[in-house]
Every structure is written in structure tokens, then in C-alpha cells.
Amino acid sequence: MTGSHGKIAVFGAGSWGTAFSIVLADAGNDVTIWARREEVAATINDRRQNTEYLPGIELPPVIQATHDVEKALHGADVVVLATPSQSLRANLTQWAPYVEPGAVFVSLMKGVELGTLERMSQVIAEITGAGPERIAVVSGPNLAKEIARREPAASVVACADEEVAKRIQARVHSPAFRPYTSVDVLGCELGGAYKNVVALSVGMAVGLGFGDNTTASVITRGLAETARLAMALGANPLTLMGLAGLGDLVATCSSSLSRNRTFGEKLGQGLTTEEIIASTRQVAEGAKSCSSLRALAARTGVDAPVAQYVDEVIAGRMTAQQTMDAFIARDTKAETD
Ligand SMILES: NC(=O)C1=CN([C@@H]2O[C@H](COP(=O)(O)OP(=O)(O)OC[C@H]3O[C@@H](n4cnc5c(N)ncnc54)[C@H](O)[C@@H]3O)[C@@H](O)[C@H]2O)C=CC1
Ligand SMILES: O=C(CO)COP(=O)(O)O
Image 1 (cartoon, rainbow, N blue to C red):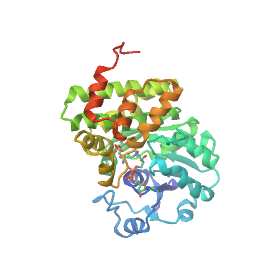
Image 2: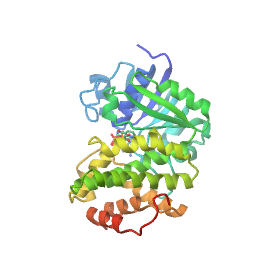
Image 3: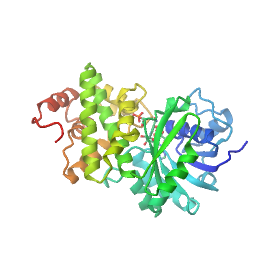
Image 4: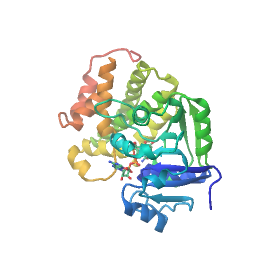
């Protein structure tokens, strides 16, 4: 059985790479997933499941997996990237020579690189030399487990070239997954990275035993902070009110499936960053991006207390309770400042 659209390579056989492969398969593509570990590729091929990241979910027959980079990329006109943000640069440097000429990169990643403070689309451009018309982002309220169960959801496909965004939109539109186009790559990427940091802060409030007033206050001020930075860098404010902004923020901050919110809850309960990281294999991007977003905000001259306080707790310099006290004690001001 083959899909009608052609072949897409998906790099990263974690929760989201695997769940998004189901969307791609349902949308009519042939999918080859590249897995870092050979045994994960073998399990997908032999048992039709990714038992480690999405146990119990049967994968369609058009999904194949391999550990061989060249084989994964051969004949693929779209390359989907779904690894942790902080390892993209090193990974892509190895993969780039095997990418088909003209292939479009689609980033699913929600992080900002430490050190360079680059968004994933910027890292892709730097490593591969691809122009903005070959780099797209898919971002929205898309918790992997729900998408894998084919629960209905919407998302945004952003590319500076609207025609390319439309082409990718057609390739990812499945019976359960509704993509909208956008040309605001920056706004989508910052919305996706920032909501993870806000979810950490919300999780801390939950872990401390606080209720809906506290979490709604953190979510709303977190969105204000996201919009402040994104607009200062040139994003369309409406993007932050859309699926890749508010939509993803609500999903992540409300869901017990979110790794970032869960991470925050554990911090609120008094566990240390090291203890939490040691207890899971899965990535919580906000635990690193709080630092890069804080630095990006400082460089841009934007006030970013949520990123600042989350970064302090992650680094072990403040407790979750101290950050809640500090939020309330900040100098008072107008809401829209
Ligand atoms: N899980 C979700 O619901 C969603 C996740 N995302 C984003 O997708 C990206 C990937 O996240 P998940 O798949 O959820 O993470 P995950 O933790 O489930 O899987 C990460 C995958 O990357 C691999 N990996 C880890 N370190 C690596 C390295 N150094 N080099 C190459 N591969 C490496 C792991 O083996 C695993 O296959 C993140 O940026 C995340 O924010 C976006 C939307 C939804
Ligand atoms: O990005 C996500 C949902 O859109 C997933 O959030 P977590 O990484 O916190 O699980």
C-alpha cells in the first residue's frame, strides 16, 4: 500500500514524530521515520507500534522506520524535524548532505537554542543553506497522545512563502487534523517555545496546591509576555491570539499529558531539576528554553518575568513559592503596558 502524495521523511521517533507520522499517513503520504536507536526502528517495522513513546497505538502500513539516514531521506521531498531543539544543530549537520535538492524542511520543534538564541527555522537555514521558501513550521495545540488517537485538532503551517505553506497544508490535512496557513514563522515559533515555559510556571502553581485563579493569571500574563517579545521581534500579534499562541498555551497549560506542565508540578512539589530529568526520557523543552527566551528578551529590551522566574527555579536559585510571591510583589503597572 502506498500513499498518493509521495514520500516524507520524519526525523525523530519520539512521541511527536511518531504521532505526526500517523497524520501524514492518514493524509496520503508514504512516511519513513528515522529513529536514533536501531531497536526503535525495528519495533516500529515488526510490531507496528512505537512501544516506548506511544504504546498501544497501531501504526498504518505506509509508515516505515529506519536507522539509516540516507535511506530515510532518499526520494523525500519533505523532511520533517522532530528531535529535541537543543540537538538539532548537531543532528542536521550530519543529515544535510543526504537531503534531496529542493526538499522542504518542516520543523515540529518548540524550543530556542541555548547560546545562539536562534529559533529552529534559523538553525535550519544556517546549517542547510535553505532559503525561507524551503522552511516551514507546524505548531498548534497538538498533544501527541491525542493526535495519535485521531482526536480532532487544528494547527498552523507557517512558511514565509504562502504557496509553500499551502503545499504543506495539503500534505498534512487528514480526517482528524485541520491545518491553517500562515506566513508568520517567527510568531508561530515563539508562541510554541514560550508556552512551554508558561506551562512550567503553571505546573509549579498546581504543584504548590493553588487553584484556577492562580493558573489563569499565570497563563494570561504569560501570553502578554509572549506577545510583547514576539511583537518586538516583528511577529503579527494575531498569531499569538491563534492556534500557535493562545491555542497551544491553553492545551499545554491545562493538560496532564503535557511534559512541561508535569515538570513544573514536580518542581512545585519540591523536586529538583536533576531529580525530574532523571525520572523521564522525554523532553520538556521549556526547561532549557526558559534560559534562551530570558536572554532573548533581555537582548531585545523586553520585560520577561515568567521566563526569568522559571529559569531561576530550574537553576535551583529560587523555589516555586518564591517565584509566586515575586510575581505578586512586582511593581504595579497598567495591564496593557
Ligand atoms: N509530544 C508532543 O505532544 C509535542 C511535541 N512537540 C515538539 O516536538 C519536539 C520533539 O518532541 P517529542 O517527540 O515529544 O520528544 P520525545 O522526548 O518524545 O522524543 C524525542 C526523540 O528525539 C530523540 N532524541 C533525543 N535526543 C536526541 C539527540 N541528541 N539526537 C537525535 N535524536 C534525539 C529521542 O530518541 C526521541 O526519539 C520537541 O521540540 C517538542 O516540543 C511539538 C508538538 C507536540
Ligand atoms: O507542544 C505540545 C502540545 O502542543 C506538547 O507539550 P509538552 O511538550 O509539554 O508535552
